[in-house]
Structure formats: structure tokens, C-alpha cells
Length: 131
Length: 131
DNA sequence: TGTCAGGTTGACGTTTACGTCAACGTCAGG
DNA sequence: CCTGACGTTGACGTAAACGTCAACCTGACA
Image (cartoon, rainbow over all chains, first blue to last red; front, side, top):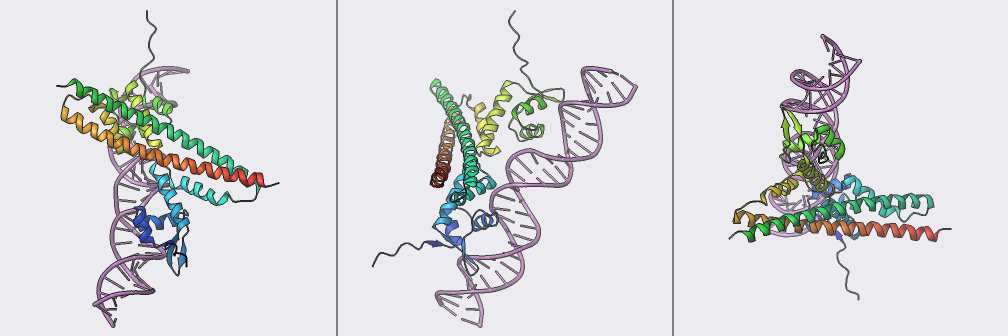
């Protein structure tokens, strides 16, 4: 007998706890079309894919993506399996734009981090100059 | 005679145009204590330092810093010139925390960018598999 | 001397991303 | 059977970051 694989599903409360958000947040994301967990009767049932998707969403939020931007990206995860050349091409194009945008944000972040370090250096200089 | 240095000052409208924001935004930032331009009578007069500060503010916004986080950082620019050991030390400590936070955001951004590229790769794969 | 562009301060409206509360169903335990 | 912990759907409240509008002043120009 193979060892049973993990539970593989979560309730809203469980997943919210694990991800460090409230159940309200998860329900809101669903209402906004960011996720669509299965249902057991009326209750939400999240699986590994939902969980991965939510991690992606929350990661995006942490560096300033809006929910609509995020919605577009996670939507592309599904669209990338398309079979229509035209659609794949426009998708690819858009992904390029998004990548460029993210790279620009990286630059902004890096510069800000550099400036923060400069201020810290100035502090250290001042400190060594004091008795 | 030395060549005259540039105007060196801006009105709200001029600076807003240059920075790509509205005058309302600049006034709002002032009300929130992020900048304090000089006045000519009642009219705001921004100099190079104000402009640099605003650039810093807007850069921070682009990767998800809130105005209160930004306010704290730009405030430190002024505090770093302090002469009190105790204050410099707490400032340095806080700057370390901020740097750590920014590095965490960098990680989140990098991972998201990597995932976006993976999706793009999947698109390209699908495209080559088609006639 | 109008008038017109651009400045000023309130004051209220709007969007985003949830928080909070009410009213209800459901299932396990005492 | 009843309570308590969890789930459900509305509906309304809220903080942040501005947008919008009114009512006003001011200097330049025909």
C-alpha cells in the first residue's frame, strides 16, 4: 500500500491561516475572479492549484501589483495552453510588456534600496565622528 | 561671467507635468508631510531638493510602498544628520529593517518575473508545436 | 479694464481592497 | 436537543490616495 498523499484540500479558514490572510480576503478574491475553488455543497474546497495561485497573488501584492493586474497574469496561466496561434501570439506580446514593467519596478526598487543604504552609511559616518 | 545655472525652481504645474502627476497629487503630498516647498507669497516654489525628494517618493510608489512608509524614509534623510548618538543608532537599526523588507520585496518580484517568463516559454513551446 | 491662465484653500466624491456585522445553514460533541 | 465552531451570502463601513468642483486671488496681456 502506498503512503497516503496529503489531505490535498483546504477549507477557507485553513488556507487563510496558512497564507496569513483572512477568509474575507479569499472570498473577495473569488468574487473578483482571481480564483474559483471547487465546492462541496455550498462550502469552498481549495486544492493545490488554488493554493499555488493564491501564493502567486499574494506575492504580487507585496511589491505593488493591483488585483486587476494580478488577475490578468493569473488568467494567462490558463490561456497559455491555448491552441490558437493568434491568441498565443497576442498573449506572448502582452507577457513581454508585463515583463518589461516588472523589470522597471526592479530598477526602482534597486535604486531605492541603494539610497537607503547610503543613508545608513551616512549614519555610520556620523557615529564614528562622535566621541 | 559664469553661465547662469538653470531656473532652479518650479511651480506646482511645471513640476507636476515633468513628474507625470497632477497638481492635486503634489498638494496632497504636502498636506501629508512628505514635502514642504518654499512659498512665494502664497504660491508654492519647488527647488532641486524638493524635486529629488519627489522623484524618490514616486519611485517608492511604483513598487508598492505606501505613503506612510515613504514618509518615514524621506524623513530619515533629514534625521541622518543628527548629532545624538542614541538617535543615530535607532535610525540605523530601523534602516536595517527597511532594507530587509525591500530585499524581501525584491525576491517576490524576481520570482514573479521568473514565473511570467516561464509562461511565455510555454507559449513559445505551444507555438512551435503548431503547424 | 476685462479676461484668461494659473495659483490658492476647502469640501465632497471615487476607487481599491478589504473589515465588520447580520442573518442564516450545518455538523460534531456533551 | 442544544450549543459552539465553522461555513454561507449580502450589505454596509473604512482607510488610502487621490479626483473633482466651487469660490477665490493674482499677474500678464490685448
